[in-house]
Length: 292
Image (cartoon, rainbow, N blue to C red):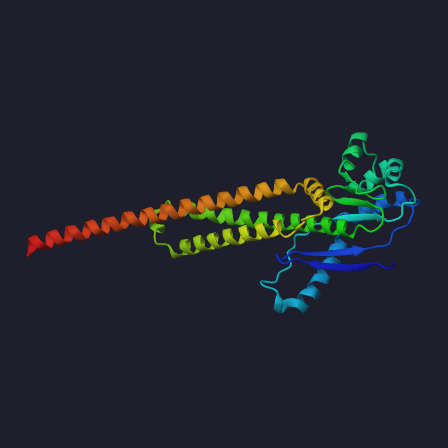
């Protein structure tokens, strides 16, 4: 089998480039995968190749893409497949525990027994002929097929990438919101159109970020397949997706709260100015009545 590259596009704007390289069918060269895993981990050549592929693809589909952009942010994940380990997955894992832990951790050093146990802790099997080991940077698949498992792992990684990107954009929006909140304390900025424009931009970004967050979290439907649902939950926990979700929700709530306070403060000050204008006009009418 020759090396191949595949691209998966998601309707919320994410893209995944998968490189496939042939590996030995048995475990005789298993130890050689540990230094290979270290080289693959955050490989700059692979990232550059993936970017070139996306640039070519984006030029082809550019008319169908809204706001086309390739972010500098990337998320690497390696999957090692052994479709025919020539023994049961349980026996294979038991015999090669140390090596498999070094592969998923991309670390050729001597890992402690506790670290080895932690590296291989997230494990799931559907039958006696297959097994999946999921870690934060890599996974090991034992047994034939498992294309659905690959799709789940791919989506979980594109999800965390989108959440990282959204988190950075929320940080920028929060910084602008705090800045706008500070300016509204000054009366001279009461009718500052630039501030009003920024508030509208913050409001627009909040809605856009919330829509993207919902789109990413509800893009994967696993109705009726309990095994894949359990696999996705296991991958999510391993990649700490619930923590990212909670962090995004907290920042969205904070942004919404700042916007409400800034808007309320600006509206209150405008009402005060209007009240003073009414008082001044009434006083002017009274004075003019005496003058006449």
